[in-house]
Image (cartoon, rainbow, N blue to C red; front, side, top):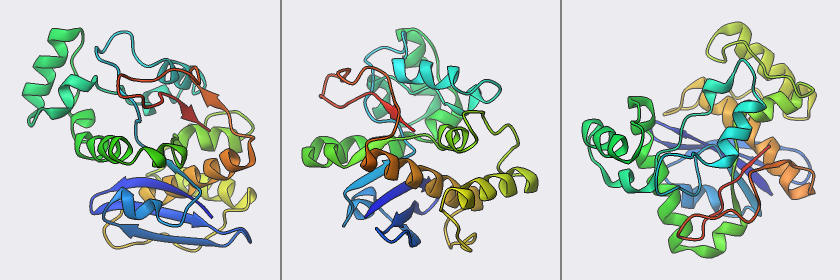
Length: 223
């Protein structure tokens, strides 16, 4: 069984896919729970952090090149020293002193980034299970390599992505879950498809496979 996970306001939306293609979609509080029973989990959250913000991770640079017109969906990953900051002002000031500041949207992801980072560092065996993915890269692959430019939070963008998922064997009626937004569910399903490709050995990896951060965590994005 493989799965995809996307952060939501109450934890993580997890889409699990069994060998027969059936999907189970729900919300869990922690990423550790999301990993249970899975051989591969693709997660829409950075894994591995550089020590200074410039140059950025190679996988992010490559991801933006694969998403013309949608490059802004690849958020800049903060450098490791700022992850312990508790306010945006503090994080922005420290990041600026190291090269470039960070925005509020990135800062709001710190708790989820730290959760993934601490889990993989404290449980090294999960580094063979948990892979960084990106839903818009997943949708682009499903769309013949072309980014889906419609906005997923708008009705037409949501419907377009649902059609792509259904076309690739990820049809589901689930579009409401307590504690999660509709687009969180969409993204979890999309990266679950990436998990199936990783398991099959057909996924594309961005960034050098041997590129690791100072704690030995890989810095790659899969789709």
